[in-house]
Amino acid sequence: MRILVIGGSGFVGTVLTRSFAAAGHKITVLSRGQRNMPDGVETIIGDRKDHAAFKTLVADHSFDAVFDCLCYNAEDAQSDVEAFAGRIQQLFFLSTDFVYGGDDDVVIRTEDYPRQAYNSYGQNKAAAEDVFVHAWQQQQFPSTILRAPHILGAGRPLGTGSLKNRDATLLDAIRKGVPIVVLDDGALLIQPATHHDIANATLAAFGKQQTLGQAYNMMGNDVVTSRRYYEIAGQIIGCEPRFLSLPTSVYLQAAPTRRPFAQHRIYDISKLKRDADYDPKWTVRAGIEDTIKALEATDGASQSYEPTELDAALQHALETHSGDLLKILG
Image (cartoon, rainbow, N blue to C red):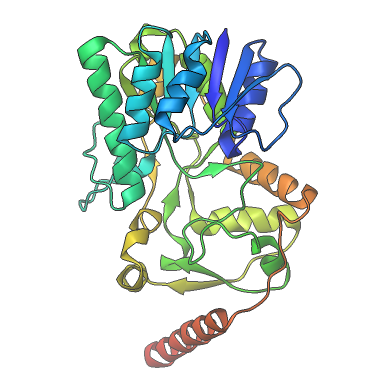
């Protein structure tokens, strides 16, 4: 199979490229050419955001499948439709769980849950989804939408459900005993995936007619609290993390656009299992371990923690608040 990975040198794209190549497929990467690709991988150098040039760049190439890691809005999606209509068997669009929103009490969301994205990132991804859905309905453009959650694996720092979320200084902070400021005492639920999961799900879904024109929740099987997520990281590096709790209600008053990070993020993945005959293999622990291994093996990926005035002020306020509450309740 001939596969084009748009953004194949990025966080997710790098693993997709290697996984697809390891499975015996012929891989082409479209990127700006700033990173070396594995042997045998063809590179098309160009700017995906230059839509006219993008269509010209891919016009003379033939692909069976396309995976677009760099589609962020309706204009990007439309350029995919125009560039590949009638020329490919399937296009995979990496969307996000941030397309969901809602203020009701539903915790486990299916793909039919209303999309009410809270921020521009989710709204733009939802608009791109609409382009692909419309193109399927009007001209049978063969797209498959994968809504990814918090993604684990080599290439990004750890962090979720906390004041800082992804944080390159996290491992050093845990080792130094610096408390992690978690939302609602770390009780928020999260259902991560690894980029390996995304690659394997893509290979499983390719060529299955029932996956065309569909959107899928693309998560792992494990659901953990954000506190447990950090505890697992601490166990892997041999240091028990300390925690301070920040109420979500207070956090969102200060940072309302961060709401997608401040809610339960758990989903029903039975549709993907049914249609693609795929079951995620990576556990949360394995994903965190893979991430830490890469962080500690790559120069500059895991950075030293240096306290800031904000860190000190927030820690003092939260510790004082907890102490005052204990006095009142005691």
